[in-house]
Structure formats: structure tokens, C-alpha cells
Image 1 (cartoon, rainbow, N blue to C red):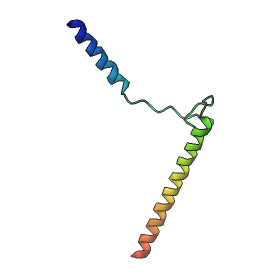
Image 2: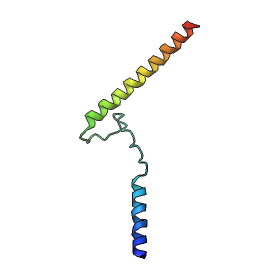
Image 3: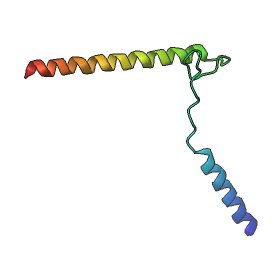
Image 4: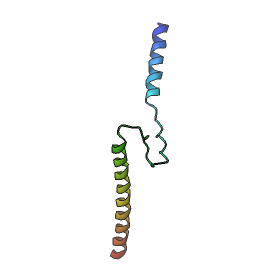
Length: 74
């Protein structure tokens, strides 16, 4: 019985530790990318990072445009 309780506690502990939040890897200082240079998917990840940067730029431009439109409406 004690073995079963110990086994259940171990299984719960391992399953909870497996669900913990993982830290984001530090950015590569040479390229500014979050992936190492020897990664197989480095080109795809860099393309996604570039797309995220473009999206941020578009969101900022849209916010500025909304502000201009709101001020003209007043």
C-alpha cells in the first residue's frame, strides 16, 4: 500500500514538473535571433521573427492613423 502511495506521489510530482513554464531562450547577440545558428529551422524562425516585426510596425501605423481620424472627426 505504501509503495502504491509513493508511486502515485512520484507520478504526480513528475507530471506537475513537466507542466512548468519554460523560459524563453536568450536572443543571439550577433543576429538578434532567438535561435542558435546551428538550428535546422533557423531560416524559418528568422522569417517568423521578421514577420512579427512587420506586424508590430503595421499595428503602430494603424494606431497612428486611427488617432488622426479621431482628431479629424472632432
